[in-house]
Length: 360
Ligand code: NAD
Ligand code: ZN
Image 1 (cartoon, rainbow, N blue to C red):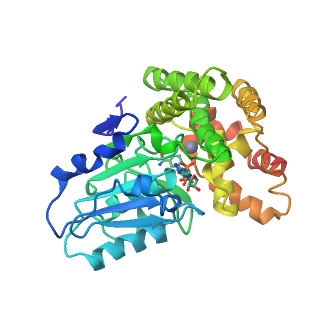
Image 2: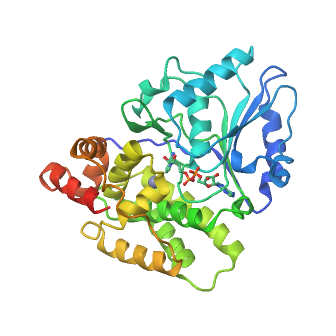
């Protein structure tokens, strides 16, 4: 047995207002006038001076506002990389992502593709990246995905939705400033928060579980219960705790895996463009059979926060379309193996996936 030797985020700052230290953190990393810092910022912050005035641009540094109506595509990453190569004579000093999972994944992927030849679609998978990335920094403004700690960046390519999983993917620096999450809309807060909850349930109930994953998973699970079912947290405490729950949930799956909900959610996202957080909620709502305790808790959380999930989203799909979703879900072997064990193919069938999809 060889044990995996995982990379982690090398540096992290935590604290309300810590975003103001960004300039100080970046200054020693600047490689020269022609090696800019490129900031990818969620376009929800466009014109929001409270946040953007704290980004200190020097020389040829640049802010690129990123739309978040759709999850990142490999073609979009290739375009961002090409834009940088055409505009600058030197590689950037650093890539900084300020936003949710979408923007953080874009920052990770661009930093990897600047030093690895070819198209990003060719690196979707496990350990295909050859060269270290450019220095990259993640600054979450919404909590739950764990993208700030993970060794993946999830991209939709021409063939599939799959991460670039590599030892070079994790951020070199993360700034956890819970204050940045203060204006997240309620529904979105719930969906992205539930991504964290689902990570914990899938990790804690998976066959890959070990004491490392369990210790992080249990902590995140406990925090999620406090945040989504407790009554005595003020808003700031809830923001602080959810940011740490996201971190711990991400750490938990680092050394294990996600499971059934994520596999099916990837199918929904690929075919229907349904986003990760809400997609996980739609799927998880139907998974009593696999995660009975977690799903019961989820239903209580949904009720407590008055969340109504869309229904009948697969109603108008024909069998070929559902088949495509099943192909995407079915191909994610490590997720199924974690959820159901080595002989997972004897425990679930494509027909079963069809039934589940049709219920959503
Ligand atoms: P998101 O990036 O899709 O953002 C959701 C919405 O919240 C957007 O409309 C955004 O503008 C808004 N928003 C973000 N911060 C805000 C703020 N402070 N105030 C107001 N609005 C704000 O959300 P997400 O759920 O964090 O990320 C989902 C993405 O993350 C998906 O693309 C998914 O594939 C990816 N993901 C990656 C990993 C990983 O390990 N790399 C893990 C899970 C999910
Ligand atoms: Zn997730």
